[in-house]
Length: 57
Image 1 (tube, rainbow, N blue to C red):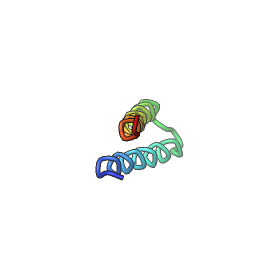
Image 2 (spheres, rainbow, N blue to C red; image 1 turned 60 degrees about the vertical axis):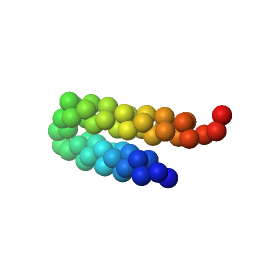
Image 3 (cartoon, rainbow, N blue to C red; image 1 turned 120 degrees about the vertical axis):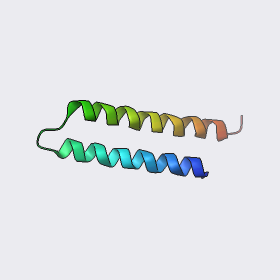
């Protein structure tokens, strides 16, 4: 695992934790949930692109 992959994995996990905390609130903020989901998807997409580039053709 490269340093960048490790960092993106950490970011993805932190965003996921923040999203779970927001969803547990009595009155979750819909805008914050949407923002966190988009951030999480960007991190996941970046990880996917890196994994795809690392595979031999």
